[in-house]
Each structure stands twice: as C-alpha cells, then as structure tokens.
Image (cartoon, rainbow, N blue to C red; front, side, top):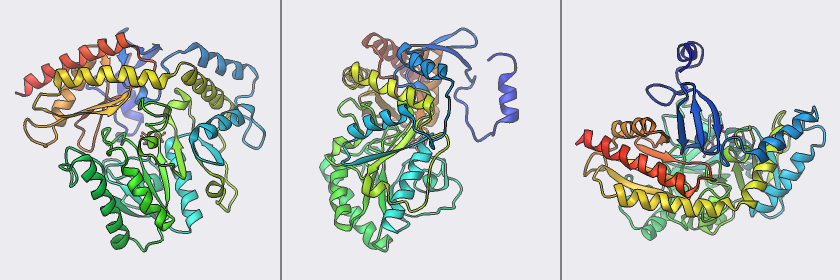
Amino acid sequence: MTDDLLARHRAVLPSWMPLYYAEPIELVSGSGRRVTDAQGRTYLDFFGGVLTNMIGYDIPEIREAVERQLATGIVHSSTLYLIREQVELAEKIAQRSGIPDARVFFTNSGTEANEAALLVATNHRRSHQILAVRNSYHGRSYAAMGVTGNRNWSASGLNPLQVAWLHSGDRVRGLLARLSADEQVDAAVEDLREVLATQTAGDVAALIAEPIQGVGGFVHPPDGLFAGWKKVLDEHGILFIADEVQTGWGRTGEHFWGYQAHGVTPDLLTFAKGIGNGFALAGVVGRAEVLESVPAISFSTFGGNPISTAAGNAVLDYLISHDLQANAARVGAILADGLRSAVGGLDCVAEVRGKGLMLGVEFVRPGSSEPDPALTNRVFEAARDGGLLTGKGGLYGNVLRMGPPLTLTEEEAREGLAILVDAIRSAAAVAA
Ligand code: PLP
C-alpha cells in the first residue's frame, strides 16, 4: 500500500464497505489478465474486478473506441438527444436478448437495472407482490435489497415489495440439497405452487432469479428448473425477470445468457458488469408491451451515455468476433476438471461447481456440510501470496469464486490452477 492510503480510506469511506485481503491491495496498472499493485507486484486476475473486466485490462480495441468518443468532446449529452452509440448498442443487445420485440433501457449499475425491472413488472401487473429466491443478491436499492435473500447484504428490513421466497438449487445445504437434479426440479415447482397458494394473494407481479447466484457463492439450480417454474408462472400471468448481471455475455460457456440453460425466455432481463469492461453500463431488456407499461416519464441522466455505450459496443464486438463464449467453455473446463481432480476429493471441499468461467469451490469442516469461512480465507490469502487474485462469496463466506476475463488463455488457466491447488492444499493442511 502506498503512503497511508489505507488509513485515509478507513477515515473517510464507510466501514461497511469491505476491502479484500488482510493487507489490502492498491492496483495501479493492468494489462490482459494481469494487474500490478503499488508495490510492483503482479497478479494473475481470476476475479476480474467482480466479473466486470470481462475482456481484460487495457484492451486496445476498447481503449480506442472510448478515446474516439472522448475526442469528439461529447462525454455526456443527456438522453434528451439522440446518441448514436446508445442506439447501436441497444439494437445489438435487443437482437441477441432472445426476447421478441425487445426494448432496452440503459442504467449505470445492476442495482438500477433490477430496480427498473421491478418497477416495470409491478406497474405492468398492478401488484407489489414478488417472488424471489433464497440466497439471491440483486443490489443495494430498497427494491433490489428487498428481493435479496441474504441478510448480510439486505440489512434495512424495510421492503417496498411484498416478497415470498423460493428454495434455491443449492446442493450442499438447504431442504432440496439431498435430492437428485430431477427431484430438485419437481420439489422446486411444488414449492412454488405452495408458496403461491399460502404466501401470496395470487396476483403476483414477477419472479426474479439469477441463473447462477453470484454473491450467493455460484450456486446454480439444475438445468430446466426455470422451465418448471415458468410453466406455473404462465398459468398465473406472472412475469419472469432473469438477473443476468453475472451470467450474461457467454460467461457460462454453454450459452450467451444463463437463462438459456433452462429452455425458457424471460419477460425481462437485466445486465451490467462485463458489458462495460469497467465503464458503468447496465440496463434492462424487455418485451415492448411489458417494458413500456410504466405510466410516468422516466429516464436516467447518465444511463447509456456516449462513453459507456462506446465501450459497450467495442466490448460486444470483441466478444463476438473472438468467440469468447467458446473460450469460456474450453478454458473453464480445463480449470474445473483440474480443480475437481486435484482437490475435489478433499474432505474440506464440499463442491467444485459452476459453468464456463464462473467457478466456485465450497469449503466445509471435514466430512460435514458446516461452512468453513476461516479455511476459505486462508486459501484466498495463500492464493494472493502465490500471485493469484480470486473472490469470496456465499451466505457464510465459505465459497472461493473465480470469474476471470473471458479472454483467459489455457496457459494462464493452468498457471492459476497450480497456484490455487497449492493454496488449497497448504490451507487444508493447516486445518487438519
Ligand atoms: N445483480 C447481481 C446478480 C449482482 O451480482 C450484482 C452485483 O454484484 C447486482 C445485481 C448489482 O449490481 P451493481 O453492483 O452494479 O449495482
């Protein structure tokens, strides 16, 4: 850490804004999948600024697109004027969304995107009842916190929505954990029917769900579960909001959007994080009939501004022209297989899970399902000591998360894997 930046941080920024690592890192430069701190130490980045640096650091195509826009002198012109980059990006996203007759509303963050989706859904359905999933995370505004099923993050207790909670597809703990994938789907559908009958007045506006729970520790339901839910939702006219903030843009390797693993189409889809590759860019996509049902005038001062949408266009073009979805599948499989064979059998590892380049390792006390956040932290610190940045998550802080840039090469995956396996083995040996 340079000078007394940490002390200055602590003196002026809120204490509830956590910093990673016992000795927090100040990153001063980045290139490709590597970042360098103020001490000159370089790390391989397996977390990409929380899945945000989706293409990597200092990518010429993205830098040049932003510099071209900066050179025009128009950093911001408000959405009251036509913005070419915004229209072009909306066209591309609408076309790729899988949602028919799609409209796109740009915001600055995933929280705002979910807030907008919930606003649209509640207006469209004239109901404030929402279904959400246990262990979910959707953001920090009142409504987004209201549908966040994790008390570490949604402490206010005030909720503008009436929310009923569904079981997640967790395979380590929870009521559905011991069931097979098919049984989980059946049980989750039965649970939905029961929740509708017992905890709602019937006129529910929407269900909001992440295809893979991000902050929740990369927990994902069995493929097809959303299809089971959607059948019931359709019987009641309930909308389905897919929160693709972490799972979008091909990160899961198998599909462009996480929802596609379930053979359903959402009514509303929210996106953020990776599409700006660091620039603040997010939004909601929805069928025109639904998205346009908000009766009042609405806009966002900075949402879809010329700089962030210039970045977004360059990111999306790069992503598609380099087929990063295929790279996520290929390199992600190397990482997942390597982790499973090297540490999957340890009795402190409950599960190695995830899809593509969204992978998690859940740590427990040996032979039990009791979370072990202390061990997770030791692994996390040891990986950093070895030159690898990762993330932590899960309701109990016992899941090590990996969401590297989708440009990660096979060599980098193997390099990171070796560091991680060493970190896990040495941290587990201390625990034993
Ligand atoms: N939704 C999901 C699934 C997220 O993971 C996040 C952030 O981590 C959000 C919404 C909120 O996004 P933001 O932090 O950009 O407001």
